[in-house]
Length: 378
Image (cartoon, rainbow, N blue to C red; front, side):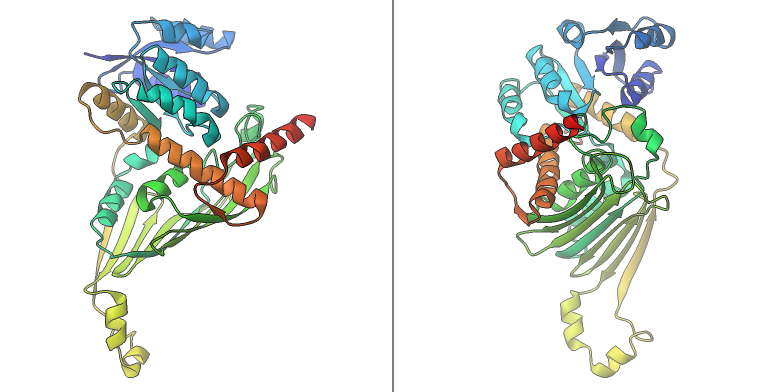
């Protein structure tokens, strides 16, 4: 049995997913229909995806009773409305990140989803599928490096030339995307942060808007997170660092973990908590630590040779959640947390102060609408 899938939106991601499904790369799923408002895409579909139904209006696609599930790949502001209509027509839903632009519009979606408990609702956070992050999640759950004191993530392998933004008028705009690097490229990192460390209690952020690119939204982000358990974190991302870095460092009571590029992990673990052996250390021993360093075990895990398509992994997991009730990599609730933290980061910068979570959703919407209006006025 194959799950019959309709793809709504044939931009870069939608076309990529359609090709994977059409070429049989995703077991248990069959591309049945696609949607695009573009007449040019109709010709593309007829040439490349023979026997696949084409709909210029997504309303007609979701009404097709032969379709079991939809994958939504349209601009951010349309995600919730299309997802709700798909649920209303009893379709399983997989949404490209982010789930939404702001948390306020999720209330009605949640009510509808509660009425459809048998329908699966997933988010395409493909970074969760990487073996290094899967291993890291297990290590943190098992508390192998003890209580986490702090973490810092430099995620600047998000360089984009101006041509990237000029390919679509909605890119990096408040009216088209609801933001820039934070809500687009960095939303994957924000998802991993909430998945690995949980939601922070407070956030303080500093963003730059169009600082190095001719855009109205953000191209540079720094955010500081504090948690109820005393843990803290720092996140940095930008689109103008050609020599970008992707490094996550996590310091715990019993050791430290570093992950480079999402595929290589170095883990150092003490035989006891750092604060315990440090109390026993004499001044003389401290001065000769290079020759007599405290005992720890070091492990290096290299996943660079792992052959894995994360998009295929997400779609196969989505299929298995429908057919075998397998837990989704990322649920609707995960998508909500992602939007909430992104909104909190923006709001902190707009208010130039630390923001507690949860925050005033109406205030966020008011500030966002003001930016959208200013952008429309040019």
